Length: 255
Ligand code: NAP
Image 1 (spheres, rainbow, N blue to C red):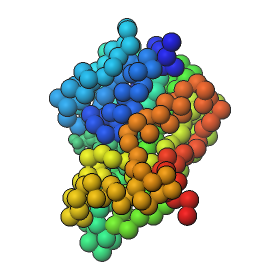
Image 2 (cartoon, protein in one colour):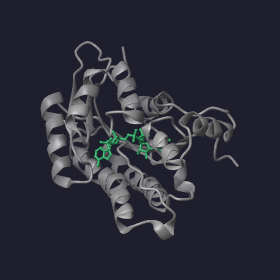
Image 3 (cartoon, helix red, strand yellow):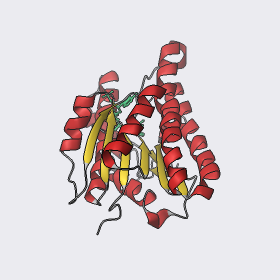
């Protein structure tokens, strides 16, 4: 028996990286999964690779989380095709890094729209179902960058915004049987951090090695590390935890 037997989990930005790792873990524990990503072909291909339990289903849906119409259509499809919605992981994300004096208005708007507006729109669409059924789990992806990071004024503001959003969801939705929490990952080896290495003109392995040395556990994180924490926070074992942000960063920000 899995912790998510009979549950439907929606994970945004899950065609790869942390989102796919989390969707995989939820599938291993019995959930039916909706993989949401910009490109429907990539989402469907990822859904086809999930280790589904007997009777569980998966679907890949193309959706831009920063667009209200696209989000409403995607959530309606999830309910229609998978029979409901119980867990939402707001994971979709982008970076547009630059020092403040070089950062454009577009860099700012794009990052705010995907991380913050995207989480708002997805959560608003899902909570209607959660409130009706008096059950729901919401998990938002923040970042250690919320605490401040050179070249990431837009991203760090969005990721700290996610923490405030999560606390407010905890307050408003707790009485309806809904838990909302956030995970703030440290350095996780994905295409997002590989792209950062490329931008800094560094070799990917060297970039990972330097980031591993920068934290107490002396290794980088992997999507599985976030997926394990996500599975706990979205399970019924964590039903007395809400509004919290868990740093999963190998102790990187301990000082
Ligand atoms: P990733 O490998 O770049 O994957 C992000 C996924 O989100 C991509 O598939 C991307 O699609 C999708 N996406 C982007 N914009 C979207 C939109 N508007 N609507 C729907 N999907 C969209 O990133 P990751 O490293 O797995 O990161 C996942 C989350 O964790 C993000 O919120 C990130 O900020 C956070 N995080 C990551 C790290 C890290 O070290 N990796 C650390 C802290 C926090 P396309 O490929 O089509 O753009």
